[in-house]
Length: 183
Image (cartoon, rainbow, N blue to C red; front, side, top):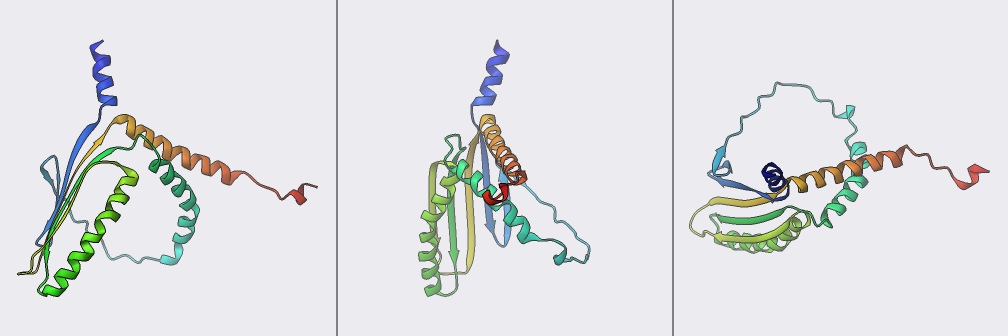
């Protein structure tokens, strides 16, 4: 009985994932649960790339309608994960006029960012602050978020995506004939 209760708690109750990005001095630091995660740089050899061999536009056109339908289903879903979002930025340029103009532009991005995040998550907390520094040139950006997701949410989203692609594949395999061709 206790095993069933523990399993149901794990499946149905959300697990908070603490995530933080901090950009300063041209370095990006990523933290999960307060522990810094370092990424290794990938070394690539000089390789010849033939862009003509891949039809990227064809691939995008092929899946565009399917992805758009899945996106609409996810936006209207009640089982979206919950998110707390805190954005803090301190910036400065050497020119006071440019700093003031950037301040207005960055503050006008707040409603757009909120609506974009709200499409895919239930936003519990949203803070957006931008502070100009008129004395020196710098960028200090901190993005903190707590994503609360449960196993049920994850399974629901994966099933929604899979059914969207399977349904689209079946519709593309059907052959539709024109009414005049049937005669």
